[in-house]
Image (cartoon, rainbow, N blue to C red; front, top):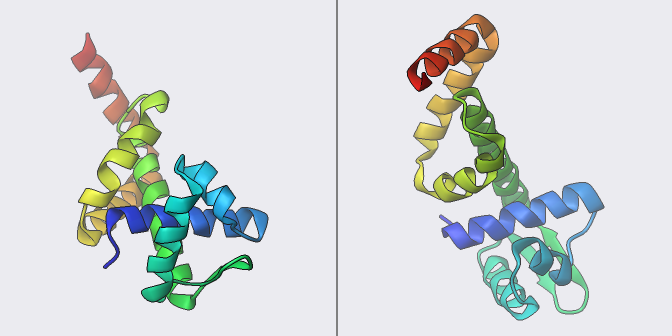
Length: 139
């Protein structure tokens, strides 16, 4: 299993490739607010673990394993953002909160949150009930 730091890199590399078609060390450094030398070290580690193929001065490409993991990590992030929104977390706090919890939940917990989101999407009246209860508790 990748470390939380590795997950952050894989997720950002996946997103960059999906949006721009490529991911350069400088782009990754900017997205993660780290030095390019830190990115190079991590990319080399990810290459050794077969998440990507890195060639110095030529760029990097996610392997099938890396793409699968990247897609899963983006799904986890988006799912948690949606969940926090449903339960009423303020928009300005959602991203930071997701970053704080996403590495600490098991994939089993993520799957159960996905089930709960699906329930709420299929039963929007339950979301409205939740909002009413939350408003009553805040009074």
